[in-house]
Amino acid sequence: MIAAEALYKSYRRDGVPIPVLTGASLTVGPGEFVAIMGASGSGKTTLLNLLGFLDLPDAGTYRFEGRDLSAAGDDALAAVRNRRIGFVFQQFHLLDRISAVENVMLPLLYAEEDVTDGAGRAVRALDAVGLAHRRSHRATELSGGEQQRVAIARALVNDPALILADEPTGNLDEQSGAEVLDIFGRLRDGGKSIVLVTHDRAVARRADRILRLERGAIVPGSAE
Image 1 (spheres, rainbow, N blue to C red):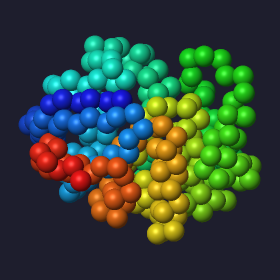
Image 2 (cartoon, helix red, strand yellow):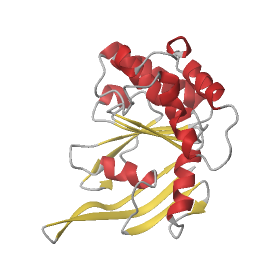
Image 3 (cartoon, rainbow, N blue to C red):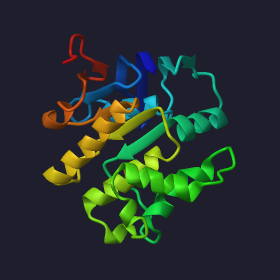
């Protein structure tokens, strides 16, 4: 599914380059659930942003579904993000004034093709996370766990091949976090690839493999 080799990324602060990734390499197969652990500031979120084409590396190669998209333009990358990758974050990023089903439909507004059954697709995505019965409720009427499940449904509505999750249980209680991880397990069983960033070893243990990121690179032999 994805193969990243020697990814480097730095940012400038007061004109001084600050290295964040220093040669990170990893592979994730189809239908594989991989967790990435590391201390705060180790580069976990930066790596996830590169894998999701939210940012571009300074150096290194990244092949997604067998294609090297390093020379692709912004429009092509945006299409890949929208159609092939789903994002789940620690913050739910739902719009409070619209219903759950309308929140789930938002990615369809940016789809290149005409969407004739947007509401139906959104309801099916909500059903996949056990929330079809809450479709008409606004975000403010949902619990934190339910809001995160709506966010997962939004990530699923375009039927992506890859799910990228950044601390998705970080704002949830233990039971809600377990429900979210159960959903990820079912998605993996259904053939989707998942890369999850977490600092919580109990969360990471739900994955097929655990990789550790230290000082901007995957530690050799860190897979568990």
